[in-house]
Length: 459
Image (cartoon, rainbow, N blue to C red; front, side, top):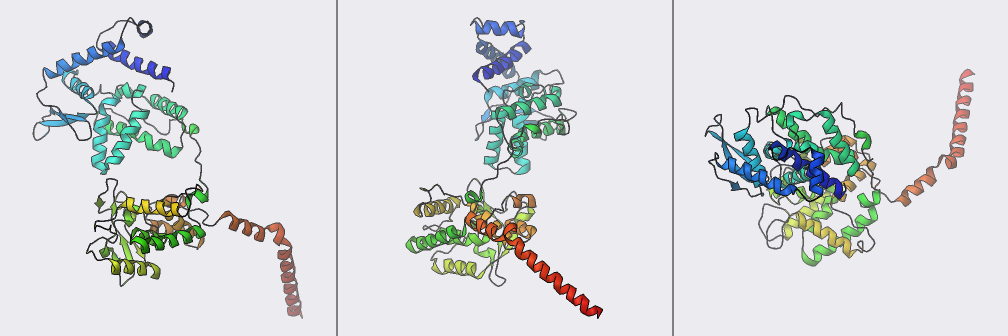
């Protein structure tokens, strides 16, 4: 979107506000002409509106305004349906909260019906965060999606009960034209629209949800997903061998157990957040298994659930002899008593960043940074899935091992775990044009043998 388009949209928004409050009787085109000539200052008029609303709200509102830890501001409004006769409301900033309070106190009795999308978004975000037990990072991402793709658009300023399916279709088309993205990328952002509308319907603000998927036509604008090459997504056998040697060297040098954790993860294939949260009590030495039941969340705290608390995230994995030796080695060498397996030198739990940084340093030591071959910790999970696949594991077995809910997710983890040179050898060795003559000779020999057998039977 160009600067001129952004300004036009902003002025259109201001015009709608000031005309609602009777500060102009001019048609929009004439008003815009006066703005461009410098005769009218739209921001001064907007400030007048805000001052009028603030004055009226403060004349009736009896509760204090309190800043929240996330930067929003909150207060109370009367509500006889609540035990204490009041309910909490909050908004992203002071002016937005004044807008909500003005609508509450000076509506026409249908003030809920006159709520705009922007008036209810923050309320939905709080509701969603509580309902889904969202992390602060998820809430932050949702707010960023709203600010980038919805805030200031036509639907953002429309009264909720006036938003039609065509308005939502136009919004989606504008977003995809200005910012081409895949279906997955768009779905990540559109939740702030679909979720807010569903919430408005459940609250009785609107009778029907205007987001009617079967009527919206925008999917033809999706950018096709590009699958990255295997070289960027998995560790090849020779790379694993180099890393293991570097991990062994690093452990002998400074005793950093992240070296052994990363080495062992080439068999476990855990998320790093799951790996760093492992406890000794998770290991069943008799059955030679480890139970995955907790992780480190985005705030750095260990939580007693795995990946949004999905049932499939909780899983018991069998341990190889090599893994058992690694865990025993960690236990023998540790002189600190702790419930966690992987510890820092000071005895505190080794967090995700300890493993991430150790992998990065190992790759740098091997010269991979200079060659542009740096890979992330999640590549270990893809490597494990890919090696399982070529070794004949059923797709559902791999899914359960990784803790995925859907096999469609697991499929995105499977790549060719061998270098292209190996594939090239197979192509040359198994080429139909190259091997067909041998196959034909075998077929002829087989047919001749069958013919001889039938002749003997006939005799």
